[in-house]
Image 1: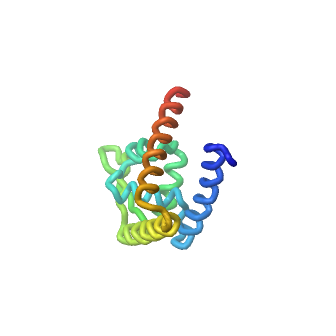
Image 2 (image 1 turned 60 degrees about the vertical axis):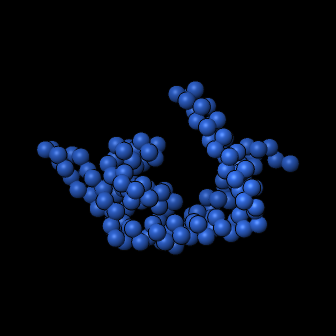
Image 3 (image 1 turned 45 degrees about the vertical axis):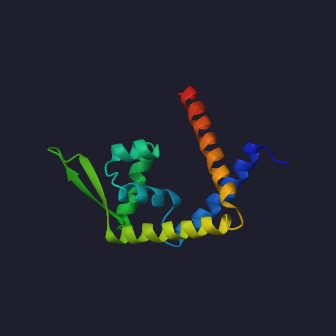
Length: 142
């Protein structure tokens, strides 16, 4: 039997493969889809997006540039020196995000099809607890 962390690593690999296939159908990466969701949710500056996604500035800039090139988001320079950029999701971006989110929900339904409500709830509780434990651990390393 695998240890809990070994099982999580294996699960993560499978999940990433499934997500990559799902987003590739819409010509996006998993990271671009997640970023698109953040922008669609109103997080519209690099500063806010960096905080929420925990991405470094160069990675975030590259992903935003990709979303602009794919016409999923637009950018507008504001402020006196025009150095602050505001990102807005386009209609195409909204439709694409909605389609991927629906595919994600369908995948989730398929994965947990034979799980009872109690089992799903217990898993959610345990995953939230694990997330908090990992956040505390990350805080100790900073």
